[in-house]
Length: 193
Ligand code: GRF
Image (tube, rainbow, N blue to C red):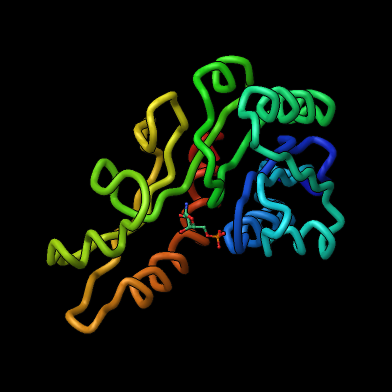
């Protein structure tokens, strides 16, 4: 299937909290003919998220949602998703855990990228833990989001070797480079492309 315009593409929202390098790679991917998605909305809980700049650069709508009260925040997000007819949510470094209620109420698909080979190392500090345990490799995972943290069905994974000289920082860098390739591939897989 060749999609030359964004009109028929799957309307996608990307949720971020920080740098947004995965957001950038998803936006770039969305511009390709072979991509089934069009990024229509960026959601963040952090008004200082560096990744918000990609909203300006690529002229994509941004919404900052404060999470002081999670229930209200999630209602606001669900409302934004409905207004913008969003069908796919991609979590990309989004540091809030979405409630069961949110997941139940959003009728589209929700995906997440995680910097470890799940089910190993759910949660934070994945690289530190992999190095501390003297693992020979780690990697990244794209998975469906369910009500349990980092536990939804796995879509794709990519292994990355851990070298003796690797630090959490150098490992994070190597894995992030793979994340940028893995997320688009996982989206193609989800939509059978
Ligand atoms: C990535 O490592 C992602 O796997 C994790 O948070 C990081 C986000 O990086 N969930 P970025 O904001 O996409 O640069």
